[in-house]
Image (cartoon, rainbow, N blue to C red):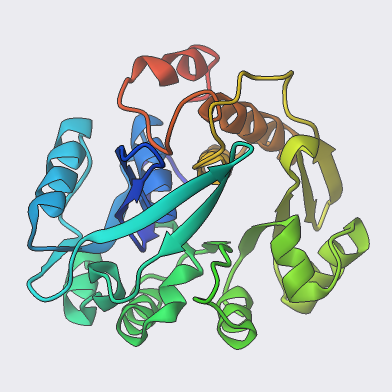
Length: 295
């Protein structure tokens, strides 16, 4: 990968509605793209919004942040996505609504959005598989863009099944998931299960997040573990996993070692836990990481 290549991100953009009624821009793909923009990687995100006021807010936020909006579709039938977030002991649960605009990606629009562009990798989550239209668009993009694929598994009941997740994982290069998700998919979440899952799916690496115990990466070089830094003042953990994924992509783009990528991903995820919601509007939040030479 070279510095001039851009990450391609496909999937949902939505508003997380917090327990106090505050609306925060979210959706794992959007959160990852937001961070990647701050990291200077200029991602292109392929998504779909409604023809409504929340969509206008998304466009305004993206433009103010300097993000490329050329891959954002508009839908006159379905609304911009919304998710109700509930917090229990700082841990989020999500009530995801059906038939949102991001479920209805248009194949042709998506294909035209990526035409003639070079990308370093493709990132997407597993929620995209719940709707035929968006899954079809993803398949079209994969045919158009021959790059490695980073899959972020997000199992949200009732919007997943083993068959769909298995199909997505088998087309991936790297897969990130948490212990609960690996238990559901593989029946265990220890290092043996991680390596078996990697081998069975012919993956370059499996990245397992383990909450307060940090994270584990198993790849062709072996296994790597790291703990999170210190004890941050946790506001909530919404978007922590997406922050972790974004730094993994930054590390892949710049050729960091596995150890360094893991350390920095945990560091950035911990920092995200000190703010509310999954995106940060103040670029000064990122300046401490830039000052350390991350990009």
